[in-house]
Structure formats: structure tokens, C-alpha cells
Length: 168
Ligand SMILES: Cc1cc2nc3c(=O)[nH]c(=O)nc-3n(C[C@H](O)[C@H](O)[C@H](O)COP(=O)(O)O)c2cc1C
Image (tube, rainbow, N blue to C red):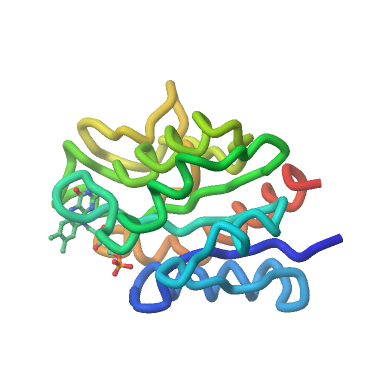
């Protein structure tokens, strides 16, 4: 079976660290790191299992390096793809837009027919609103370096175990 892709910007600091940690826990030989800033439709479509790292910038928006690939994504048929999102956000600094990037990307992927996996509980976070929230879960993994950095390792480990089952 083809490896799982971890797609994130190689230029980000915190998202990059989380991506590295996911790779370690998942197993080096199971995943391939793919730079979101250098992504083609062909490369994206060559994976059936994808983990995407999506931070939130600019008060509730996607980082601008996604601007190029999102229009391409909106032309793809993603049925049959299982995609898991992890997001970086700051719940105290941006409580009204916490993790919105994950919600924005989740909507785009679902509209193209992808199956999203890796949803996690909103318990343990404090925020006012989030586009990533679906009832009592986020549409992916929420990582908050600024306020809950000490929980990152534990959160990533539990999430990867969940993904191993949901990707099967
Ligand atoms: C200018 C700016 C705007 C931000 N806006 C949001 C936001 O709207 N929602 C949120 O959850 N986090 C927001 N953040 C926090 C970032 O998502 C967080 O710091 C993240 O760890 C950055 O990851 P990166 O270093 O990989 O880009 C913002 C950060 C900055 C500097």
C-alpha cells in the first residue's frame, strides 16, 4: 500500500514541529513528508491517505501559501480519499476564530468528496467560536502551542493511534 502523506508547509515552525512528531509516532517508513508550498494536483492525487497541517492566521483565515493550491483543490474529485487535518491555533489570543483554518479546509475537502477522519473532542479547550467545531468535536486535531504546549506530545500520540484505525 502507498504511504500516507503528511502535507504541510516546510517553512512553518510550529506546524512543522507537529508534523515531525506525527511522523515519529506514525513510523518513519509509513509516511512521506510533502511540502504544501510546492504541491501539484498529481502529487496530491497520488495518495489515498493524507494528513494535512493547517494553521490559522490573519484572524480566522488560512495561511496565504494555501492560496495557490486551494483553487486547484476545488477542481479535484476526492472521493475515496481519507484525509485527517491537524491545526495550530491560539485559543486565548483568538478565541473567536480558534482553529478556523481547519474548518475552512475541512469544508473544501468535504465538498470535493473526501472522507474526513481524525475528529477529536473539544473538551479541554476554552474558546468562543471555531469554524472547526462540529457539535462537540473538532474536524481534526487541535494543537495550541501558545497556551497548551505541554499537551502536544500526548495529543499527537493519541491522535496517531486513532488515525491508524481510521485509515485502515
Ligand atoms: C497574526 C496572527 C494571526 C493569528 N490568527 C489566529 C486565529 O485567527 N485563530 C487561531 O486559532 N490562531 C491564530 N493565530 C495563532 C497561530 O495559528 C499559532 O501561533 C500557530 O501556532 C502558528 O503556527 P505556524 O508557526 O506553524 O504558522 C494567529 C497568529 C498570528 C501571528
